[in-house]
Image (cartoon, rainbow, N blue to C red; front, side):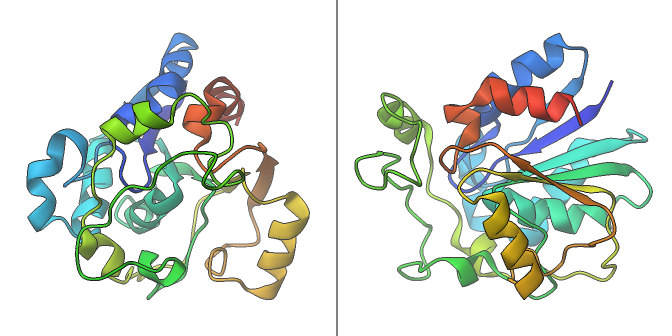
Length: 227
């Protein structure tokens, strides 16, 4: 049995993991799907949300469990990365879903082009707008968009601060990148993976768009459960 802590990316709450969490729980795993401050049912906290507070949300979700597996999707990889060193000796494994272990000083805003110092509006999630990014969301775009919330600006503008670069065994779930592409990015020191401890990591291809918890939830759950 694995204690999973599932952390969503931008605009989403813990609800985004429902179709992944259900089969994991049915298989006997303990699953906590985190809603980060300022999002979904915690939208009222948006003004106080920071990357630091999101890291603390992940730490709080771990509770007093002796061993946890942290799973971070997209932006969720930032608070997951920060939480590892706040939980010394308690993180059995880290899983980055279409994300990666960025190095100290990196901001989510470094990988996007926010319009300004305002909360970041959700995208359309419509495959017609970006067939690769939104692949697999046909018929679900409106449902996701209705539940998505603007993402607190401060959390994407704040740099991740790390003191201990060491990491537990790391799994990279590749959705919008191929194995060959990621191997090349790792070799080139791309910021997505510049913080990777190259002694203990594995790559897992799960081709789809950037939101596999919606487009391939059963396959993502099976992959996580088999780690």
